[in-house]
Length: 473
Image (cartoon, rainbow, N blue to C red; front, side, top):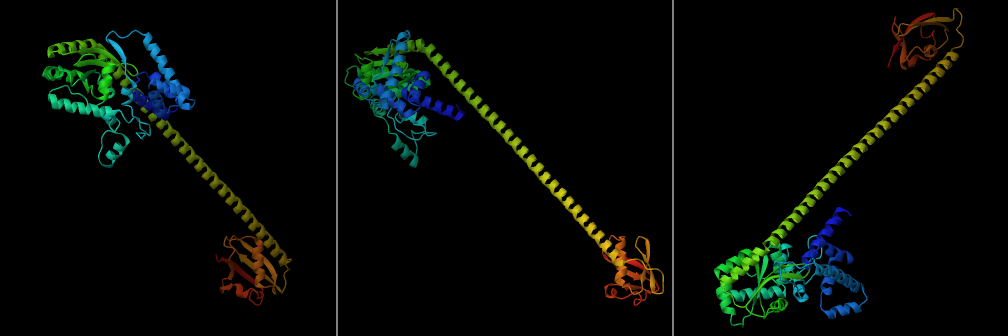
């Protein structure tokens, strides 16, 4: 599995745990895996699996994919419950209470929306949970968008109304009841590693005013509860307060309880206080519960710190791995670029070498062709001269001096043209230059192109002449 897939799985697992309240990561992983890691379907299957028996009957009668997923979720949860029931109950708790699905689903009004990296998010985990994931407050367009996406749950509205009414009747010196539904208050206590102090308010009970005014709202009790507990209160006239009174089996009022989160949708009832109590009696009870539960809370805090440390370590390891991977990729990219550069330079050098070699071959071939042409020309001109005549009155003796100091002498018929002298010089092959003139010194006469047709006698070179070669280029 790639690193992005691992991060996506971890995010979905954390969301599923936060939404359902299931702590066991193995159970959560199994449920998510049974639904193909579709967060919305897994949560929907969880809530429908925990609904009333009529809903279960309807599920059993269906035949679609959702029915299959609900059945799979039910099997996983039933197996977990059997394992938990087989284990001894904790000595700290009086009893383990399974909350009704109406209390749980009251805080799980799911909506679909884009949160973070496009994951499905739970919309009804109340204002505190919504604030954590960035959906609880805002201004302007963002606030309006959030309001359309998630509305305050009925349980939270009841809690806010209760707090307002309680403060109006008994003043501001009181336990700081949270304006949240029970499940969110329970989650808040878990996150704070505190116990949850629960007060069920019966407005019609004759002992309620005296208990609230002298005990619950005394400075001693209020300060102790606010420092050591998360407080939640509800009126039994309201829906959630009534459901919690049934779950906690409240028989006498005023009713208080101290609970803590257990596994799945359960709570551990640590202490319940029924009937009127003085502030001193209540303080003794709460101190004893706090003292007895302290090792559990400390252990939970240490476990959470260990999980955070492990998560931070994994994040650091992942970051180090990504950094090392990026460094390796950068080095590999640099190595490839360097190799490509060297290959380009080698190809360019090879191209230039071939071009130079071809140029040399072409120059040599052209030089050879020129040399061959010159040789043919010299041979042709030598043949055109004919045999050298013997000395006689009509024979002119010509001496030719070259720039190198070399001298050549030959006899020509006096009727031969000046061109014949040029042909003679060309046939010797003593000159590297192409352009030259035959010149006599005394007097200086240049026998150029305009005199090529003159005979030796007509040019005044008979019976003998001394000429030198003057280069023109």
